[in-house]
Length: 359
Image 1 (cartoon, helix red, strand yellow):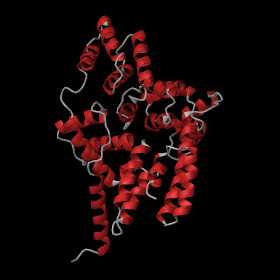
Image 2 (cartoon, helix red, strand yellow):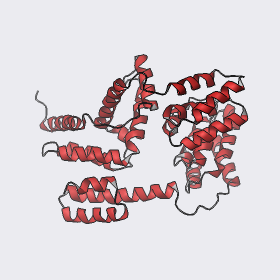
Image 3 (cartoon, rainbow, N blue to C red):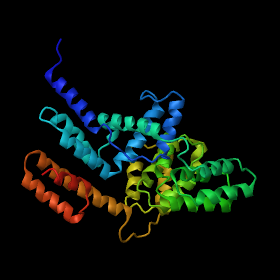
Image 4 (spheres, rainbow, N blue to C red):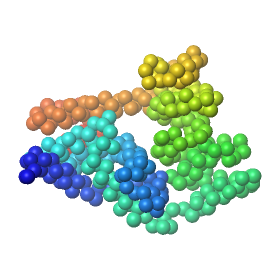
């Protein structure tokens, strides 16, 4: 039985989109944790989308290397816009619109996920065995073997704290999440980790997924607060939802809420109220959150913050999506006017710069 013509068109569109993106460079650092974890999964013969950890790793990489980088999304969208033909336009524009909407979850866009995965495998093959800094590896080994040996720990930290890199950031993040160091040495490691921000960010977020920890890494949440991590409130509420019903976590969760008292997210209290009012929130979590609200006295925030900057970017993206819709509908002059307004606010806005080149 012949395949329907529409199905053929969809398949052809997907294949041409994949071909257009082939060879795209996502510029992943050779020491990035995604490559490190990917190598481990390959060694364990688990590099398959059927493996939950492999899929979680790829999704984390998509968010880190594509989803949160508008310039990468714009480059990908530009390539696909140029490659679209009359026959493949419908399918290609569906992918383009996901790339251009910064709220869209690219982990659900098969063409992007497959292309990114193929890139990672190729990138891993290109990494030279001795490409990393041997001193950092040696310092990491020394640090984790230095239990009870303060001099060895100090020597290791001196190397790690003086060498900002994805690897040293991961080592320090692990060191402050576990009771490995004397208090003053842990404070030194934490200070260095904060100065390295955002190098450890995606590694930490990845390791919080699925809540594999027996103990909540308070120092990580302290760092999120001090670095004004945009997702801090959401991460804390996720910890509450995951662990509040366990009596073993009550003390830890109460301590966690103390740690995040200084979170500057202007919607923190609203998010807490939304969680309390949700039918899916258990009574133990609600009780902890109500107590937090009673004691929470947020300080007024003035001037520009990461949240205000993010809101500005969301607003520009909303304007851009409307301009792109007009452009795709053939209303070029109206689209041009919208793009000019966007570029008047941000001359380097990557989506607008990309689409302006299509005129």
